[in-house]
Length: 208
Figure 1 (cartoon, rainbow, N blue to C red):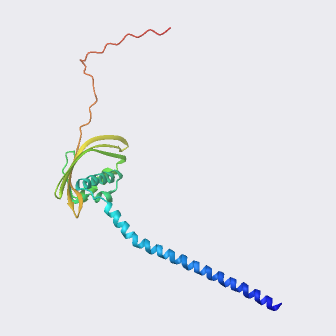
Figure 2 (cartoon, rainbow, N blue to C red):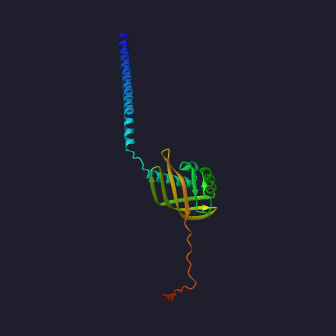
């Protein structure tokens, strides 16, 4: 009887040992497989990133200037002076449509811009009919714009044109000159006093 129990106990112990060995073997194989896949991914990642970088098409100077203008106008509308700073040169010259001296230098322009922007809400500026020309490290662009905002609590709309001169400094186009002019306000249409009056049609009888 005791011999039978010993044999049965030994058999169960052997089965448990074999089961544990199988579990350990499977765990090691899984770890090895995961490590191999990770190593393979490391080897293939540089290649894939290189291939994706080759697919990127660099922008032309005209496209870079067009992007700079969009970035500048977006920052101007949002009141983001830090973003706006990236598109203007330190020695920028600003000429506006009013009878006033030009604003020289980014610091002076920033003070004027922040003072004006604080009076505006719901600002919208749309750019149309843009023309861009590049000659070496210098480029210029002109465009029309439509402006709408609430200024000092009143809805305001205006139109105008802007011409900018840009230079490529440190491989980045920056605005060195900005000249903005406003279109004259539209005069309300009035009828001359001596204009002949339009004869009125006789009233139709009411239907019966």
